[in-house]
Length: 83
Image (cartoon, rainbow, N blue to C red; front, side, top):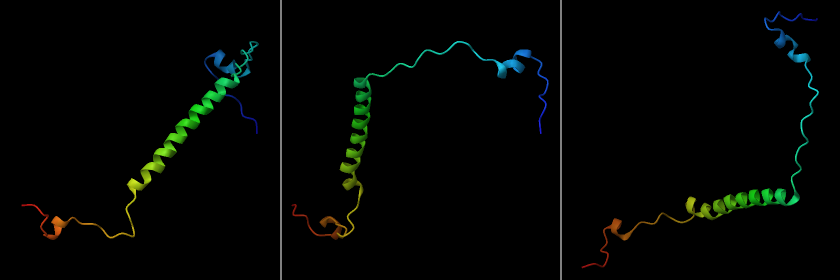
C-alpha cells in the first residue's frame, strides 16, 4: 500500500518535494480596458480578413456544375476570322 522511496544520492533532490518558498510572486499586472479592447479588435480584424478572403475566393475555386464545358472555336477546327 505504501511504497518506500528509493535512496537518492543527493540530499537536496530528496528534500525538494518538501521545500516551500516563503517568497510570494508579485501580483499579476492588470491589463487596461483599452489595451484589452485593442487586442480583441486586432484579432477580430484578422479573423474577418481571413473569412472575407475565403468568401471572395470561393467562386474562383469552384467549377460550374450546371454549365457544359466550354471549348474554344479553334479546337473544333472552325476558322477564327483571321486572314
